[in-house]
Length: 391
Image (cartoon, rainbow, N blue to C red; front, top):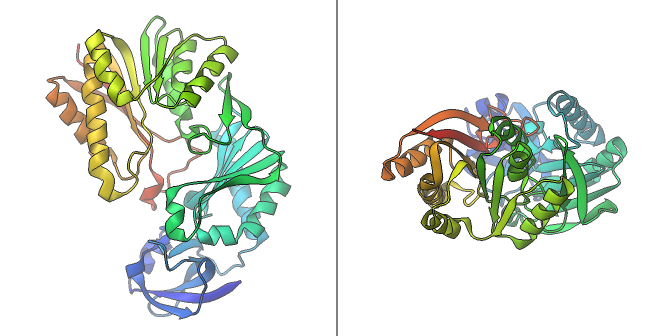
């Protein structure tokens, strides 16, 4: 039920018409009626013309999150249509796995909701108060259309606090095991549903893992930093490489070892802080043909960007001496705050400080089931630079 309306500053409706889904505080000129936090509101232009319908939360940095540009009811049929559209797209772009992102928030027209499928189970994240209040509409749609054995919510992100929401994790439907077995490119993985990062597995790196496996040659040595449960390392090991995975989480390394056993692959696993492990590896004279640097989102906001730049510089600076001549370096960032230009700049600085020439061979992004909406730059978050050291 729509509780009121929000009138926006003149001219700001253009970007909304073009597909940008957020309205910032300074773009609101008037709140009409008394919408409660999380309610549905109509968005009006400065002249009072209809722009769209979205959720409203005056406490958020982005008080309005658009759901539609049409005058239509936000009901179960609305979410059914959004889900069907998303499923049709995934059927075209996702292959060789039974795990994928089904709904990617604003990119799929459901601002604040993420739904990942892991085999017969769903993991959801609710990022906004508005989508929390609409749970009674979208949750039954997921159950009836997808018929999962269980649905668990992993809404523990820090951003919920500004929405007035407490972190939450718990089962919403059916029963969900602590570990869900999935398959990707013929490899078997176990997805932790209680303590795993993100929703349990880095689905967004799927195509980059496959690309690494295509490029690695038998006998090459591969270092997977921030390896989590070992996916990059195991793809490399299956391609015939000698792989080492490093992660600070003992429980992640325990799962990586299980993954290696399940897939009858060999890799070396190290529980350590990658920032501290790298200088020691240099002192030990270790050498690699490939190094994958894929840290978690150290900084998520623009004001934290300097700390993220410093972290990437430090990792690249200490990784470069470990590379063989013509060695390959894959540097990833899953933080929107650090754009491609920023990444190129900080990697260039690290290479210059090491008096090393680096060649950029390719830039890759998140997997296509995490669609990047051009009119919504924030939906492009994962960037990977594929680099080569001069011989």
